[in-house]
Each structure stands twice: as structure tokens, then as C-alpha cells.
Length: 161
Image 1 (tube, rainbow, N blue to C red):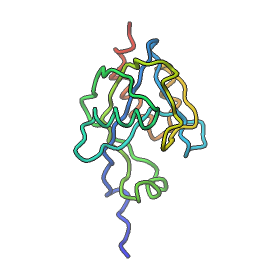
Image 2 (cartoon, one colour):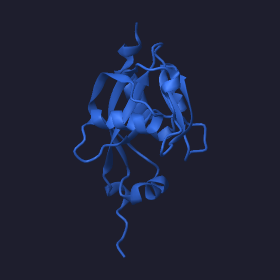
Image 3 (cartoon, rainbow, N blue to C red):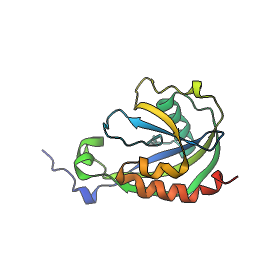
Image 4 (cartoon, one colour):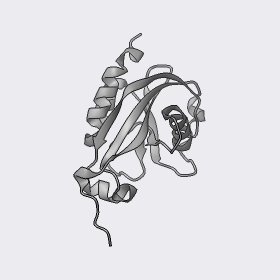
């Protein structure tokens, strides 16, 4: 039987993060089914082999919230990474990764609230809401807050009218 890879030697999982912004500059957040705390997050998911971040973002948006009625506003120039707690990392992705490295995309939601359906084929969220940009940081689980802070800072001009 092979030994598990040391947590600190594991790579980060390539992933896309989605900041979906409605017409009044609120951001989509959902509460994950597998987290019973009060944390909320923006949609995110793995990038499949051969897929661009934009392709992954549109696919993940549809898979997680039932729609991809959105227009790309901006792609963050950097990959932003976060580590997850070691115990959780050992449970997720077969213990292969220590966290995620994300390419963040900001989208303007072009649909209606009725277009959002979190009861998808493989549901990830138990509920959803629109959040102000100013409350987004404190809604996230602690290990995602640094990345959320960076995204909020770098995409801030999108919210300035």
C-alpha cells in the first residue's frame, strides 16, 4: 500500500472561480450542501483537461446554478491559491491536493432570478442569495478569505458606478 503524499508537498488543484454580479451589483453566493456551517461561497470548480478557464467557468456555472446567462466582464490576470485544512484535504480529491489554485472570472448576470436553479443533477448548494460586495469577505470560510479579499480588491472598480 502506498503512503499518502505529505500535505505540504501536494500540488494545488486547478480551478475556476466565478463572481456572478447582478444588475444592482450584488454577487451570487450559495451555502454548500456538504458544509453545515453558516459559510457562503461563490461558484467554483475544477478545470477539465483541455478546457480554458472561460469554458470551465461557463460549464461550472451551468452545473452549479442551472444557468450560464452571463457576460464575461473580466478574467483575473493571476492564479490565486489557497490551502484547505489538512483534515479536509485528506478527504477531498482522494487526498491528492492541498488546496486550489484559481483563475477568477467576473460575469454580469443577464438572466432573471427564475433562471437560477440550484436543484441541478449534482447539487452543490442548499440555498443561495445575492450578497453585497462589502459583506462577501465575512461570509466565506476562513481559508478562502484571503483569496476573496484579493478578488474584491482587484474587481472593485466593477462595482463603482
